[in-house]
Length: 389
Image: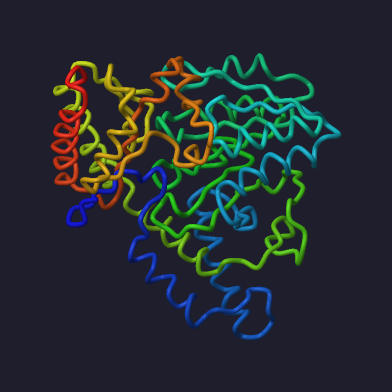
């Protein structure tokens, strides 16, 4: 690994902790360490910070503070949303609809729910990774209790028409959940306008700490808790709250919202420079996903003929100090090394679905980083089999 030059272009997997976030967290890690459920001054100080953070995050979603439930991760929030709705509403129905390109934590939760007497329909996507909400209307039946469609995909960055999904669900009186871990802090989200009943967000995708997430739950929603204990988080998520992490989450969200407009322009420019250079240098270059309805931070691409060399290419780039990904970081825990379910759902074959490279640009990336990547990528490809260069 190049220890002198390190370029991180895998911000969709996780982001570095912003120094301003760490600064906000430090007093809670060192001095103001109280349990928010305690009645003494240490506890009341922690409770005040918890209440402040809850109000702040709620304001960014156009939600009420008592509709924000803090959790340990986006995965936990998604599990709480799907399982909590399923078991609280099984007297109304046992049918759930999700998109075929959801994060593994949603898809694996659905597989488990199918063993518990629920049945799941999977919305297809087109070759840009976008759902057809007319198909959604056809899948809804009298037993449908929940629709879950992610706001933006973690692998290809496709942005779904959640306003349309929310409208359909409201008309049919079905709960609508959206996983917004990739979009929160990058796109404006109004849960009221979009008719969202449950929304998953987390901190470590927005330059905050790992180990803290949240679930927005509309106060009219009937949901069962997964954890039972002391009744924290309005009785929906018992566990002593991670106050330092929650304060960091709120600060990270504040920075993202305040800087959203300028960062969107800056990162879009970097992403476009990168895409244009690769397009010009490689005849077989192609982009996976929508070129318009896409997160500005995301570039998922491949080069025809080079797909079989992707893992080797990534390892060679890592030796040069460059971090990129083949897809979802979580999918790398899959011991079967299966092809991307997202790319397969979009119509890519098995070979192509194993050969994509995901670059996700973030707050601390510069134009120099992009230039260094392009130079390193070009030199690395030359080391591979000449028929691919």
